[in-house]
Amino acid sequence: MKKIGIPKTLFYYKHPVLWESFFRELGYEVVLSDDTNRKILDESLRLSDSESCLAVKLLAGHIKDLSDKCDLIFVPKLASNKRKYFSCPKFLVLPYLARLFSDYKKKVIISNFNVNYSPKIVSLFLLGFKLSKNPFKVLGAAFMALKEDEKEKEGKLASFSEKIKKPGIKLLIISHPYIINDRFMSFNIFKRLEELGAVSLIIDEVPYEDKDTEVKWDFANEFLNSLDYILEKNIKIDGVIQISNFSCGIDSIMVDLVKEKIRESDMNYLNLIVDEHTGEAGIVTRLEAFVDSIKGAK
View 1 (cartoon, one colour):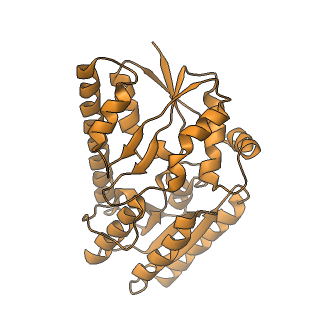
View 2 (tube, rainbow, N blue to C red):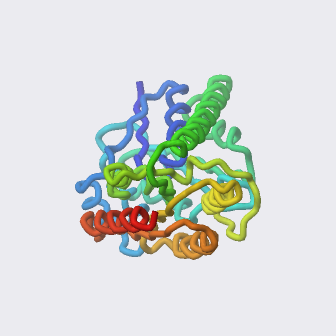
View 3 (tube, rainbow, N blue to C red):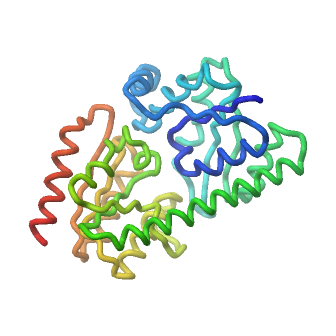
């Protein structure tokens, strides 16, 4: 059985179940790179350019980690997840960076995902046809993967409903999935907050009504709509922690937009900026001070 590797960073965290289910249904063994660690970070910094954000830099280390573990490497071009909206432009060059970081020794499977031009089911079908010439098998794998992806989303919504009922101060964590779900990049923030007696709510778990926003990045649209849902439904949230990726232009705009939205609410706000030089001790100290200030006010 052939092994297909997926770097456990960036695009992976947006649809982890989708990719893994799809390739397994096609008969491939899915191999993930290791969780981000110091070795992967050091390798990434050695290979990457200094202008990219930390998330993009980490792709290099994850690709290197896969070099001896698989036959193929999958890195898609994610142009858009929502019609009339666009993803980070750097996502378009990730497959070509992957080829560079693998020294062109591994075949990198590339597929375009842009819902402005074709539905996701079509993009999956075209991707699958690169790996199997059986159209029925490919179509079945695509439907199964989308079904599993939808189940994961429903699970997230259910998780939000359960967490909001728990006792303790409620903190909404806003950031990209590849920061929130990467314990190395987020400094294991959920464990830290749990130890401080806080309940962490992830922005991806919040339901939302699909409507247009002033920004045209797909994930920013979801963030803002989820935040509107909380404000319009008067859901009690004690504070917002926004984790920004240093040198990310989109994040620099989103910080002001989030602040503006919660200005009239009772929610406290903390912005944490992370890069390869961020120290864990400083992050922990700021989290402790933030939680203590909320508890003191209450």
